[in-house]
Image (cartoon, rainbow, N blue to C red; front, side, top):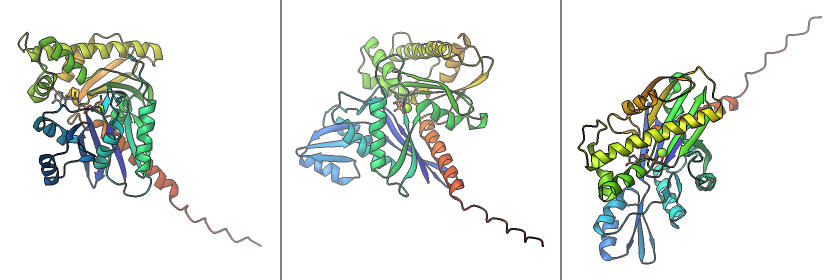
Length: 346
Ligand SMILES: Nc1ncnc2c1ncn2[C@@H]1O[C@H](COP(=O)(O)OP(=O)(O)OP(=O)(O)O)[C@@H](O)[C@H]1O
Ligand SMILES: [Mg+2]
């Protein structure tokens, strides 16, 4: 067996194969700290709520954090920010350890192959992804996995562009980041990230309209569409403006980076847009329109939207891990018995 793991700023998702089906397990990358009380104990014992107790405090982790935060009137906290472990959050590592253990489970055998997503270094900020990447690797290795990082954009290529010989431009629009990778026959020729994604859209739209950021996020996730028929001055209008701004920002960075990397000219490149932030109807059309005007040295054969944008990255990690395991098995198989030597003729 083999597994893929998407370690995201908002969601941690694992993927594994079960017969013909791919099975995903997901938790919110979030927690809340509450005081230990009789009421808390009662709520915690009732269900399979992920939590750790430390002296008089209880940390409720993952999907249940938001419910507990509402009931106990607390704020949720997030172990990651802008695609990597948050340096402001001292409890980040134990919280993520608990979530990851629940989402991937025990390895099926010692040293089971697992690819976990890791962002490329962002081009618009000086944060480095190295510490984040190495910390996750040792956490997963300690659990008994043979863990290897996979670039988040490359994971999109593995997941969505297998039918096109792993050639194309894969873009994952997440919460904390947007990751871009241009691959040519499974070789990444350009990869980068920008430290903007859904969180940036939410914060900007909240600030512009004087609306609490959680309200903006839930309006965006509910049934927001990028159709530009929304009312001027409202939250949806502001969301559309910042969505459009994010797309232009990402496209400008692609143009800059393609120029710098001397990418081969004359290719015909399919583009895949995915990640939670790519969910609203109209997203791929808007991206296609804006990409049309961009000055690129290659042509775009199409912009595709993925059916389940939340799962692309985890699935890409699974594809990579399965392919490694198949290769391992092929090399481990006993060699064909040697042909008996022809009897020497007298
Ligand atoms: N239906 C929806 N419409 C719009 N946005 C959505 C929808 N569902 C989720 N999102 C947004 O998608 C983002 C989460 O996406 P995703 O899980 O791909 O990010 P992540 O992998 O956790 O983050 P990152 O890759 O940046 O570390 C959040 O900003 C969330 O608000
Ligand atoms: Mg992501």
